[in-house]
Amino acid sequence: MTISLDNTTVPAKDKIASAEFFAEIFGLSVTPGHFAQVQVNESLTLAFADEPELWGGPGFDIKTGQSHHYAFHVSDAEFDAIFGRVKAKGLPYGSGPYNHTDGKLYTRRGGRGVYFEDPNGHLLEIMTVPETGT
Image 1 (cartoon, one colour):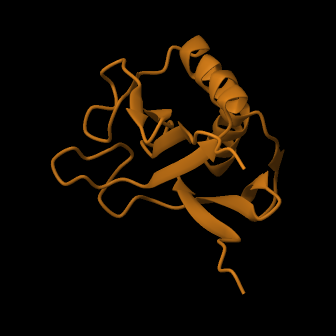
Image 2 (image 1 turned 60 degrees about the horizontal axis):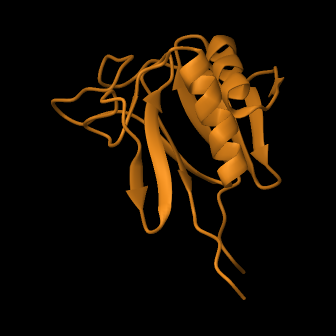
């Protein structure tokens, strides 16, 4: 059996607002309930919960590197759409976890990527993976 992540809890000061932000940026929808759930794909759900950050967040603590980091492989078209929404909202973005506001993209293994924060300071990352010929 292949191991795959089914769901994970995302701590938030306001679970609905956080889930709605994520859903809007990624072009998805929210199912409210005990958790504000966002179905990312057929096998992954993010369950947003009203929970405080253990380090006193929100925000990325650059001194300790503490934050929640969620990274997503996306197609080139999805990258363009998501990154377009990030820029349209005027969100700072950047090329790495410690320079996630430098206004640059990164390239790695033939793909491109970018980091940006959600309203709770969680570090979100989208990256493309080059298609391989068969």
